[in-house]
Image 1: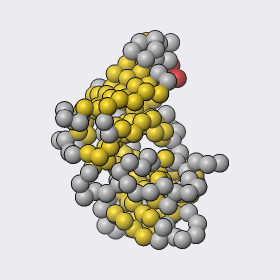
Image 2: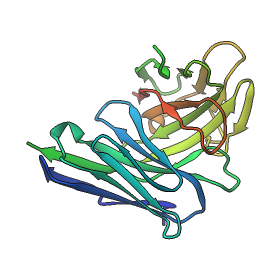
Image 3: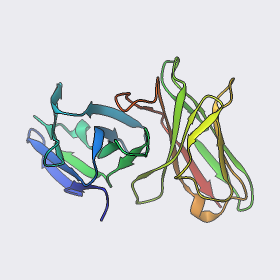
Length: 111
Length: 115
């Protein structure tokens, strides 16, 4: 079992829909990141959070430390949101500052 | 340009050749991380460096791979005697410091193809 599990693996939505991507982890963490990767492109850091909730534009990220679970929400989705969304955790144990990644969620938003 | 710069964007090598991937961190950042993304797989940590020091190399393959981050100049990920299985996207990230609350900023990656 991976230390970081994401669901769903693939998600197709219609423009305007509310989208939720989930991330569960099995290790103690000091921070959790949500990243966005476009096809053939680089990686953009969307959020880094260790508790509660953060919002940036149409994106909202939440984390529940007790349940070891985080969600990324996209409101009023748009075709330009189509990308791979990756959850990554930074463990508070001996692994220092490196990140452990989920497999990613491929999101396609159709017009 | 204030972002993390990686070059080249694409690199083609024949089996047995050497590959050198470069990463210039964001200005003011002294911590660099290398990650590898194999085809159809997720990102995996390779190595974490601070200026002139390797902090954590637990994700590096035992042979043929090395990394450095000299006092002056970019960080270099070097792969000797490349094999087909080295074909992947290699991403570099940098942070200002090494604490858990430091965000990592990613470059656009180098796509390495082995013929």
